[in-house]
Image (cartoon, rainbow, N blue to C red; front, top):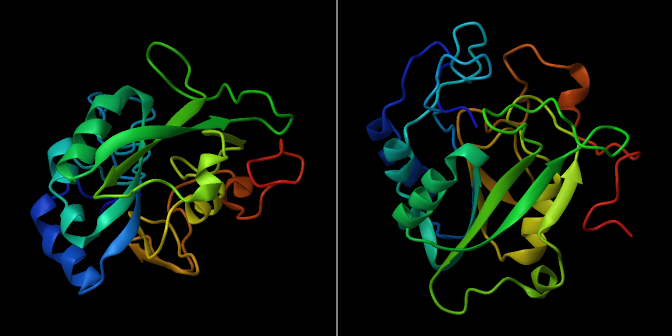
Length: 231
């Protein structure tokens, strides 16, 4: 979900606006997935993405994220899936509104160890986070999820990957529950059948910072607890 060169200190929203519209051209997307590079108030903390020791990626302010022209490239009736850290839930709701969507529900990602227990290595000032929220919003008329979505629970558990990267299980959920065409913004890598936008939206994506080798694997560990679509 990196926004720009990791060596930079900030990211100008004005440089993004024409690029996203140009990328979309005349396409309008019925489903948008976004994992923005949120900026935390404590930018010097040891887990902050732009910490000088880590230099993972540049972040954006909530105003810059909210200024992205998502409303202009979404279909009149559309779904939005928006990842937001627990501490920034109000910001996530504000961005969803700025993009022209109304919040309806959320999906909870539980980060687990190989044995299925909670992965307590997460960070948090008040509690140690082992979950993350994927907010769901809609715009337009007749915007309910597809039939599979109305049979699924709003929870899934997988192991973590490299810092901030979200699990591939999200795509199967979204593809089953929301109509195409699908767009992912701030994508890491590519996915067949999806339009992807962002400076990491390339087929040979690899993290540019140190991480655990197992965390960049794309195949789901068969020892993990069964997910939403497992028999």
